[in-house]
Length: 297
Image (cartoon, rainbow, N blue to C red; front, side, top):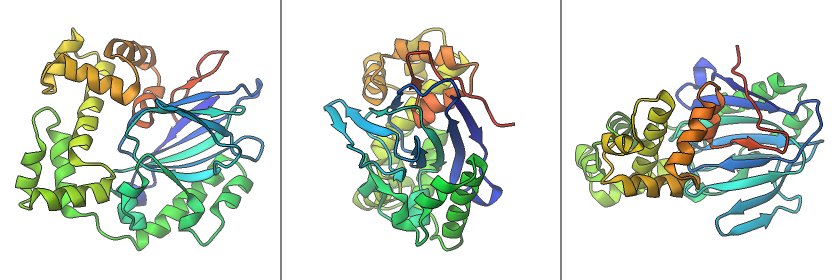
């Protein structure tokens, strides 16, 4: 398996965090377990194995759900509020576009909350048959072109980001360890009810949940950088009430304990798969060992 991260085109930098591609190797096609962690970043995904969807089963804390061949090959995945796994039939070839938190609302003019923990077929937002074009494309470079052209067409007619939410996201991203939701709606000078409604429509999740996710991702960045002596130091630096709250969030968002997650991050620190592990939350596991990605030149 080869995993590669691609920067977005300049015209899409306000909407796209990055693109990624996964290509099956020539050493057989083992089934994979794809572990998705909690994230507020929506994603456009195309995946297939031998011309059909590689995803055969979705497993959550409540058990498994067989897809019975019904999972689309191209889809938009909304924010994730609980970790889950996809089981594949063979190693998929895939491409993804990780979006900025407000991008779905701006590009497609949808209430993102309706897509939280769900997916919708990509063709629902295009007159062209994007699924067929992606399947018939001549390699990943052409697939990247198909998806970026689709997004640039949407960007040319997109609505403006909700400035209230944009301001709030800036505050959260710059003050993850010290800011509270009440500070946000006071800063933008609207009622709490109006603030929460607009925030959820733009990002898919309540502001309080987004703040928890961002603070957790900051914790993981500290793990990656090795900027702590004890895990309890991270909890303290990021304003967790106590270590038990840090443990609770880590378990809820990943299914891991902080110690286990820290070990996983250390093992991945020298590889760009760290971004996959934490931002997209898609570590790949197979009997022959883990896939080792490479960054695009």
